[in-house]
Length: 264
Image (cartoon, rainbow, N blue to C red; front, side, top):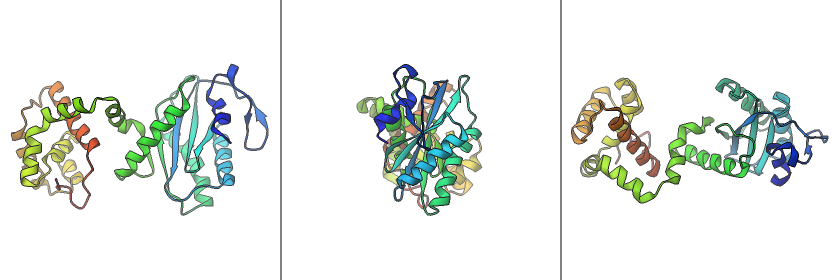
């Protein structure tokens, strides 16, 4: 079904033509509340038209207001209805997506489908913009090894980075991390990643595990990183600015592999 014909499921009723259901009948679904968009991206192969029809039927079976829209052969957008009050829990969203993926797994056990769950999509919001943003986030997540189902909110900084002037972003990162970058280049370390993980986790043991380092090695490198930065970590504003700079740096640069976390 062409996207133009499917978009009527996310436009106000007054402007919406009839929607063709999976069983061939047509209806004008009531526009009630908002939707949560979930992009399903096929990493290997493409689904047949029959399988997409089964996925759409499963979506309707979970909630008759749900919609499954094909963006292209390699991606579909599942719109999960939230109702007037809105606010589906993450567990319910997982179950809604899972009801569709169960059909895929039954028909194509070898298929690998990744899902990105976006923020609430209100009536009148442009479907094409939402789908494009979630697909970009999906590619970003895949490049960093995030498989299965991920939440777009986890990559909200990636969306923010797209809207910023690259020169201003670089200047901000340089102002926060210049000493660390210089040290890493000279000594072949990755103190910036060590410091980022230390800010990510309250437990140093958990942070060391995430860095694939021995706890003592992690503590030594963290101590060196703290010597090189001119930041008062007791200040919420300075701590946040440093953390954002480290995240923006990670977004614009390739991630180190798990086998060599300390590579510059």
